[in-house]
Length: 305
Image 1 (tube, one colour):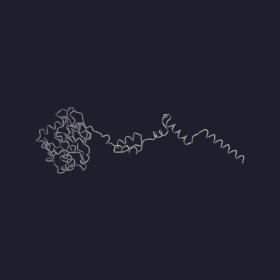
Image 2 (image 1 turned 90 degrees about the vertical axis):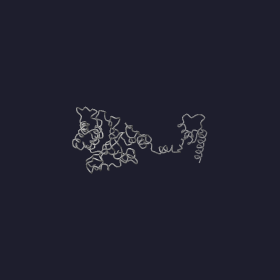
Image 3 (image 1 turned 180 degrees about the vertical axis):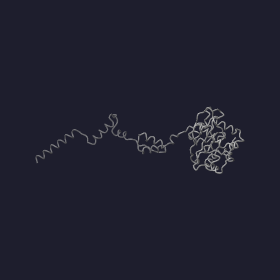
Image 4 (image 1 turned 45 degrees about the vertical axis):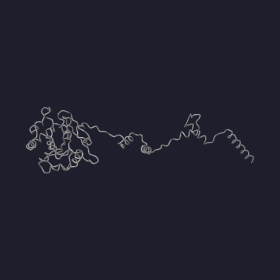
């Protein structure tokens, strides 16, 4: 018993000494240590309660449509990689609208530019028209001229009868096709509408002549269309002395197909096979698009001046 009493006395003495030292509780000690790490040099007039208020982050009040995107950004997983940034821009293209720069738009009928994807602009060397056709078939201008020359020889009497009432005769067109010594003069330039007839027959594809003055579609005269409609070739005459080729894109909304201007009247009168009329039926939606865009220039068919 004496031994037990002695141990109780010694324990009581130790507890009394600890209380005299005024050591804070464990929770208070940890709290003070947290404040020292968080605010190493706090102002003398700042109390602990004020520090707690300042350290507490503010909650954003997301109200209205202006802050709606901020809300979704906060909810989305954060990723600082470059791929995630590019994906976010692509997912919201309306934030940065892309404006295409289409040259010569002032030379085209108003409203046509919304269907133009790109413009092939060849050198201004006198061969620009044949260069435009060659670019569509991976041919040189000389190869295009040779193919047209053979086409004129194949149906010479038919072309003579077709152009008998035009200012430029068959012989003049025939002589301007081939170029000697690679010297292209003004007389060797592509001429419309005659070359529209020749090109459409030689390459078996619709040829579209575009200008601010007159726009015409040329179809092949003597062959039926294939099962898959070939892409028309749009040739635009700009600035009174230059040919460019328009690469057209699909439409949107109510216009699903790029517009085609009215057909040349001579095709309606001189096509020499019954099946050739199917060309017109194959592109009905394209003609409708043109008539919707340009109701004043949709007389059908069209007489070429």
